[in-house]
Image (cartoon, rainbow, N blue to C red; front, top):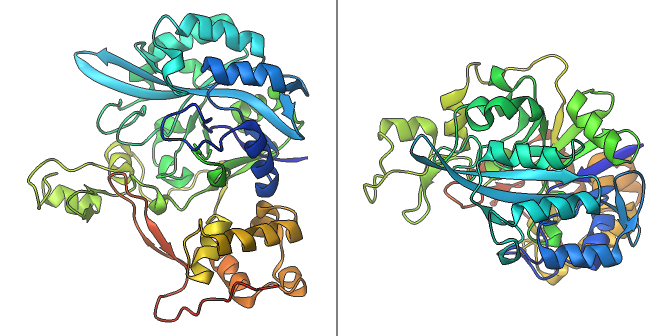
Length: 410
């Protein structure tokens, strides 16, 4: 069966996260999106775990269910530590097979940080020690470096990371069989590093609000249970791990270099020409993911390896509809159209991934919306890259040619 899995999200107990990140809303949005398997996020938070213990029901081996949505126990933690006199900040994803295992993990991690203070707790603990502790509790757990390339808080981050997995995890590197590429990079960028050939590349939304669910995800063809999902990732078997769903990485908020406060958006070449100094304020620039990949890559751009897991770039449906209507994606008109389309096609992914052009035409879907979806599938977009915490902007139709639809499209 096809399984669309988004395994990195946050709950309402994480900082800068919407209050709608509760089980009822998450379950509803997972259905609208077409997500088969959703990570719970934040299992280290005592109140979120207590709520899950009360409401989740056991499902297939290692998974749980709430209101028709299947969930995997997942969490993100922030490791803050020093190596050779340099401060390091690495975010890690943890997958766990049972609530009982989660309780043991939380008991141990509570000695390294205040779990109640944030859904993504800060731990005074080296990344390799985290691997040792968690796998010592259960060998079925999985640890994956989160958003591996962002300038801060990542294993390869330009400001606080490492140049290799081995530098970060030492003798525990063999247990790290996957990394999360993050919104600002895609698999093709990661294929440029031969050191990553052995690991799987997964993608997740890191959603802080329900509407952001599934903006990146993983697509499997396997049984819907914890061991099968873990095996599909670990084995990198293209018959089981079909592809990842990706942001266009330019849209990610750390793709290019720059200074947001100075309105400076720069390519790596421009940054190198400027010797990494902002032309406006004279301070060091924030080097983005593209720059960092270029620093560590040992292969040219465009490298494609045999037997790699493919990927598909998408633009979320709400963003597509926002451009068609000439409105913000969060406005009432866009939300109304979104729910109409989800009801008609079954889910967002059913429309964006599966619907044939003829099918869309037969249902009476607006020609402008059809054209927008087809352009996204072909990558026929204009993208102003994100930088220094500022998301990039995607334009499907040139502004001078855009003719916005009326709200009543049905």
